[in-house]
Length: 587
Ligand SMILES: [Zn+2]
Image (cartoon, rainbow, N blue to C red; front, side, top):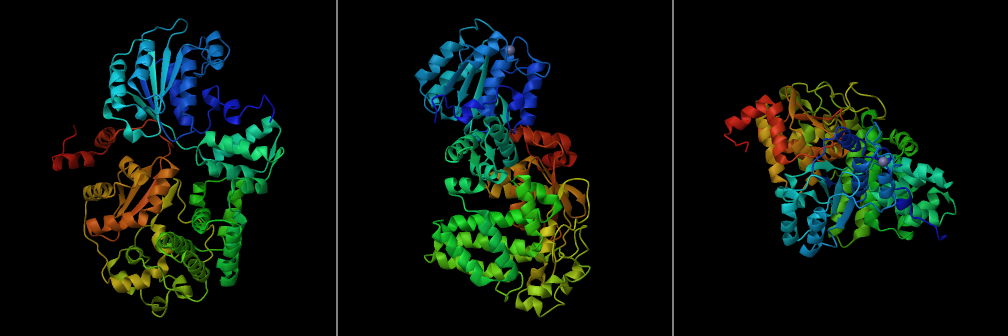
C-alpha cells in the first residue's frame, strides 16, 4: 500500500446527488426541494448503515449553500462555498456523532454553535448521526433548539433505528427512508470503480462482494478493498470467495444435479467436501435454502426480478431452474427450513443435514419419503386447488396415500367454485411457461397452492368441506389488522402489511400493492401462514391474495402509522366507513 493510498469508501464518496448509488427516488425529492427552496428546518434520515445517509446530508448542506446551483438542484462543486465543503473546511456544516458524544455537554456545545449565524453562505447545517443514542438529558437540551431554530439553521438527524426515535422528534422532522442498496446497483458501482482504478474484475466476484455487503455501499467498498489487496489488480471469483470465506455456488449447482437425478450418495459426498473445507453446516443449509429460493424465483418470468444478483449469474440460475418443477422448490425450501429449525435443537447435527439431503434427492422421483409434518400448510394448499382436472403430477411422486387414490381431489370439486386464472396444474418441467400474461408485474401467490398440488389429495381427505362463508372486504381488513397485532415480531412483513391493506379484485381475490421487492419477499415468504390466518378469520378457504408491485416504485417519504391510517381513510371510502362503524377515533 502506497502512502497516498486512499480507501475506496473515501475516494469514491459521491460529491453530487447524481452519483449517490441506489437512492434515486430519494435524491430526486431532495433536489426538487432544494430547487424550489422548500426547505424544512429538520430532516430525519433513516435507514441501515452504509447506505448514504451522511453522504446525502453532506451533499444537501453543500447544495443549499452553493452559489451556482445547477438547474437540476445539484451543487456546482466549483464555487467558493462548494470548494470549502469539498475540502472539509466549511463552517456551515457541523457533524456530531451521537453514538460517541451523547452527553448534555456535547449537545450544549452544538446548540451554542447553532446561535452563530453563517459568515458566508446562507445556511448552517447540523448533522447529528445516530440521534437515537442521545441521552434523555441531552435530548431535552436539544429539543428547545429544534423547536425554535434560527432562520439559517437546518438539522439533519440520521439514525439506523427509526423505531427508537420518539414522537416529539418525528413530528418535527421531514422523514426520508434510505433503502438497502441492491446487489445490482452495488455491482455496477464496483465495476465503475474497477474501471477507474484500472483493475479487472469478474462480475461473479463483484457479485459475491455485493452480496456479502448486505445492502451497504460502504461495506461493499471496504470488502472490495480487502479483496483487491490480495488480488494483484485482477479480482477473480476464486480469489473473492477464498478471501471472504464464501462457499462456492458451484457446490449448490452440483447438489442440484444430485437432487434432479435422485443421487443420494453424490449429495452426501458433496456435503462431506463442504465440511472438509471448514464450512459450518448451518451456514451451508442456509446457503442452500437461499439457492433454492433463487432458483424458484428464476423459474418464472414474473419473479425473475426478485433475484438479487447480477444478470450473468441470474442467467445461470434461470437455466438451472428449468430442470425442476415448482413443487420441488416448495418442498425443498420447506425441507431446508425444517432442517434449520431442527439443527439448532438436535445433538446430532450432521445427521439432520444428511437426512434433509436424502429427502431432497427424493422429491424429483426417488423413493417417496414422508412429507415434512406441516398439516397447516396442507390445509391451505388443499383449499383452492384446481377443480378443472386432477393434477397430473400427483401420481408422479406424491406420498403414497394420495398416489393410490387418484380421485382424491373430488370432494373439493363440490364446494369450490373455480378460483382465479391460475388454476391449471403446474407443468412438470416448469420453466418459462408464462402463466396468464398480465401487464402489471403481479406475483400470483395462489400459484403456491396449485404448485403444491401433490398434497391436495391428502389435505382433502383431512377436510371434506371447503369453507365458503360470505365476508365483506371490511372483515378481511379487520382480519388483516388482527394478524398485524398478533405478530409484533415480524417487522418487515408488518411494515409491508401496514402500508397496504388488501383491496378486492373479484369474489375472493384481493390485491395488495407494495412498494418494493423487500416487501414482496416478506409477504411471499409468509404467505402460507398469512393466508391460513385470513381464511380462518373469515371462514372462507377461497381467499387468495395477489401481490402487486407499485408502479411508482420505492416511496421516499416515510409515513407514521397515523399518516398511513389517514391515507387509507382518504383513499378508501370503505375503510373510512369501517372506522365509523367500529367507532374508532382518527385522532
Ligand atoms: Zn457551488
